[in-house]
Length: 314
Image (cartoon, rainbow, N blue to C red):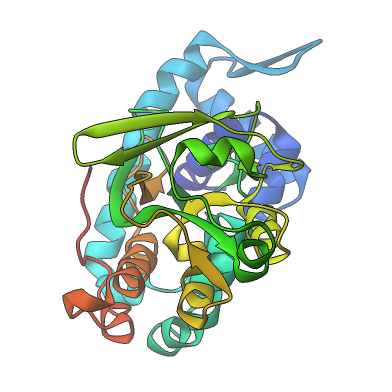
């Protein structure tokens, strides 16, 4: 195995934390990973990893080498893409993670256009509402909705959506609709968060803000559950318009207190820290951006072929 390949193996071990996980990411046997690390240690004349009760631990030499190796690999990948051209770089697997409901409703139905424009690409879509460790999971691009907790991540906003207060028409016909924010305290409100139980809703009308404590029979930790609960008539909920716009248009779901604002959410393209985003990751982000902003005159099928479109840092 040449030195460049050994460095790629080393990076995979550093990012995943184990030889076996690195082997799975690289689609090779674990003995090949062990051999590559042994060859690299022999070349450098240092020990890179130690084992203890907590697993595999990188040495100080490994940490120092990692910083330089990561930059070197990034520069080599950039040089490779520049030499082959952007179109030639759009081949092979692309690993993307995205929220379950958003990806099911907003992305997957439109993927035929992306594949038509990029026949050399395959996509592994990891549908998960939780923020995954991109390096450990070998993810090329994460689509995340909401607020980013890590300011060190390379990310940019692709689109924004207002949050709306909604209920099914069946719920409104059975319970009537609240006419004020305060009246929400007397209604069943479905709450949504990854952890904890949010009990307060804030609403804005001009410069006036009102907050109300809410309660209901159901708390969910995924947007899919929130959507299902609204459609089933379990209660009122605040969600992004992306989740229910088709039902709002059909009349199956009703927007409540439309004069009040309940905030907005952003859709982010997030790339693994310490790396230049790959051409194929940028191509997919540009495709999603065009899907979510059709009024800006961007054609998803056209943009899919131009990986450099709108790339940058937030």
